[in-house]
Length: 418
Image (cartoon, rainbow, N blue to C red):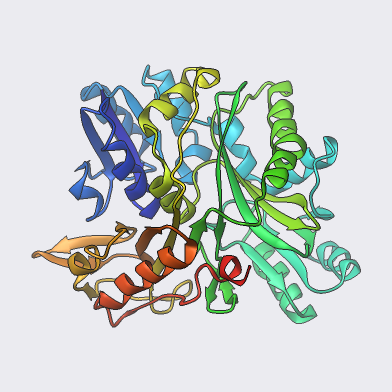
């Protein structure tokens, strides 16, 4: 079969790496891809939001199946366009992707279906938002209602920070914002694959959103992750399915918009009770990288089963080993950063036992590996324990010669503290 993978980040490199191992994938393309993806797939220089060109390419090459990696094309309706053109693809469609496209929609859905989440208010007026936020006390959470690549959330510690976040988000003329109660507890991510009727639980992971060690600094798209997440005990997973995910999918089906594809549930866990923070309509990044390291089953077959309503016939096998990924980012990220600096010695780093390096924002120029974005490399390792995976990952990080990059040095600290 011919597969087309849409996207160019670390998540897409991990997906391409997994898909390339499938015996049913005869040819794998990636649009637009990156320097690392080019090692396992043929790059097609078409952007993820160039829907007409993607459809023309898929039609002309007789692509059998399309996997859409990032959220923006899913929310924008790429799945709908592909299916209308007779090209099978992993969803969701735009109607289902609203679970990521509108945080306010998700909060209203939770309220209507008794799904545990934080107290909230949707606001389009700054003064109303500030009044409600003041009533919740500090800290308080302010979220842009649309997509913001993991950086549209402010956990305000002071009144000035709270008011500044509200003014900034509403001043951009976006879709409004959501003010939320701050939830205490430990954050984790759980994934399922669904065909709209059946739910196939995947596994969990724990992300590190803040830019700097000790969970300090601004929120980012993710600076590292590991799996398994010890906080996601079997009882917590069962509650997550019964109280959060299954009611959500039932509500989506009841409104005439059944959800098909990967569903990412961001959770806050306190006193063994999970509450929903957010949904994403695709694999997380960098969580996908650790999931793919642990997946032993054929990813291509699983994704096809979701599209074709065949998940009830499928089970997945996962490695008992742990996996951990460290994001190497350009200095200044998630703020202003420079592109185009050379990265050396990646090949030597990839020789460390158990290590796989997934590229997130790289290009090759005259045989040199160059940075082309904010989050640039994902140094990922497996090991018998999270401690072993962490040691291998950081040993590889230390071998990479990139003066213009930085990373956190404490990925996995919560698991190790346990």
